[in-house]
Length: 292
Image 1: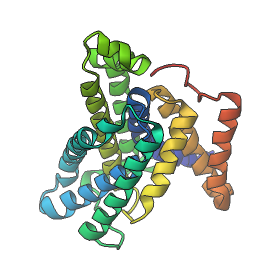
Image 2: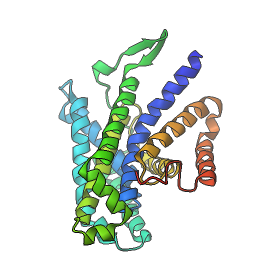
Image 3: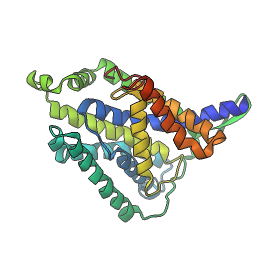
């Protein structure tokens, strides 16, 4: 039983980061209908930005991590707003292949940015002192940071659900997702909505990136795995569904945690099998019938 709780805890820790990756992508995919193949690259850029903020800009400040948790999403949100206005806005009326080519080009550009800006060696971000300890539950040790990551993701989940369900932005997003042309005729500024949603996706990626720096080093090439994983999460949960992204993150996180212990060499295979199984039973994803 002790081992089971520890494995579940590890899976939920993975899920906390996965949700922040998938929720941003599913919002952009669901509302703007943009296949953002560069989402994983933007996420990794956020990890590198966090590394620079914590180790260089705020090196002497014990609150460097907390400042980066605020600043990294803002920086990525601003970058997303610029990228959407300069590149993606020109491709909304075109076929998805054009969007794929634009975002795929961004992957290569950002890959060179990593190499030029931070080099080829893995980078590690020091953990804040207040989160470096261990808490005991049922006489079992659990890392304080992992508990924080889980609780922080739960908080972001409820914030997102509240925004989507009760605010004017959420109602307009659902309307634009359902029929953008009709919304345009009714006077809704659809391009502005696309810009806001794309920026929100980048902000969520920035939050996840900052959390992930304490769980993994930053490496060149990791953006490919993250992008594939993000799309798997969106497919399993359902396009445009925040709740689906949360559920898919928990499922994949637990599959990885148990698979790493019992079938370490087949973890990726297990993830793909989960995706295939969901598609066979529910082709639109677990919660794909809902807009959000």
